[in-house]
Length: 448
Ligand code: ATP
Ligand code: MG
Image (cartoon, rainbow, N blue to C red; front, side, top):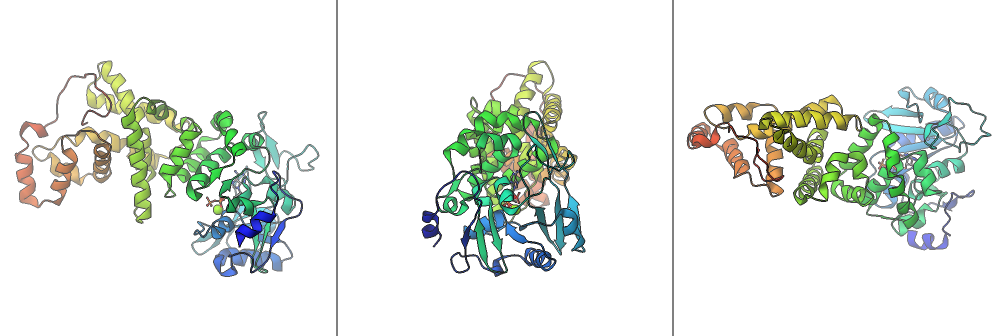
């Protein structure tokens, strides 16, 4: 049905003044598909005399037969007016003020229609501000629904659904693009990336998650604009990066990022090593495959492990340099971990609750060699053991020869007390901490 509709629409690059209206029965969405919270928000705002629509990713996902992650509402009520009508509502954000309305565990994000920032804008610096490069520091100029549509990022995200009359309003020809699986930015791509460079990361994320192809103009402007990401505050960049890898499509997203050299913006030190070191390529791909697998199986994933993997190439290389300068191996690893983390957090503000366990995972790697006497018994009791062991398995899975160390630990964990004793006894000198002189080695060849 959508296919037929899609064909009759013309492709235009900017949002339309008049939307294409897709009435009930002509599209697959029903009011029952909309969450209780979003339905309630629309109804309450309409009863109060405002206009309100369900908008954005949820409409897109429903049209694609996917399960929306959350529901967003757009309205002509200001944030203050929205807040007034709900008991559990909170205005959040400064660059982009929105209202979070809570219904039990659900949070509905309510945004006021945004308008373009023009010199004529009556609203002052508090509402609109941009840098010399054109990046929007504040995006709080309010406007009409069609202005709002043209301020959204991609055509497929500018679909407005009205649950009361079960109608979709398509302002940017998003349905045509849903039909042809095309991700197309609204307006001039370079300008839109300049206003908000995070849109480039969003492009990579949506292309991967939805399995859409980027429209050629949308794609072509990314690489030349990639360095603009340096201006994004590290806290926002961290949040956006987590979204890239924690949605079950981490590997595909990573491939998209690599296509546009965006990996270099997020993880410059690791990215610089990948071309020349196949092991690191394999290692990161394997880590992301495992992450996707865990998410599909409903297992827990932590940013600590994810970042430990993404930064491991940088840590290994930095460690080699310290070793070459005469540092003992474990000390070299500690120093490398501290240095790489320090440089990385100025770019992505990885919170301490993740950066500390991330470093512990790295520093645990050489300790996994030490199994003699009571050491193995003590190691398994450490809070970081499980993650460190998983990390060791990941290294082996990626082709590193750790001389069966992962397997040894797997057996040790499965064994009863007597078997454990026997395992540590048969280790001989192997299980003791190795004192060794620093030596040059290729990445991925060493067990520690
Ligand atoms: P998902 O929630 O599945 O990640 P989404 O498209 O709903 O995808 P949100 O971040 O929830 O993404 O944003 C909701 C909507 O707000 C988007 O669909 C888009 O219309 C608009 N939007 C979000 N971020 C931007 C941005 N940086 N620039 C322009 N519009 C944006
Ligand atoms: Mg959303």
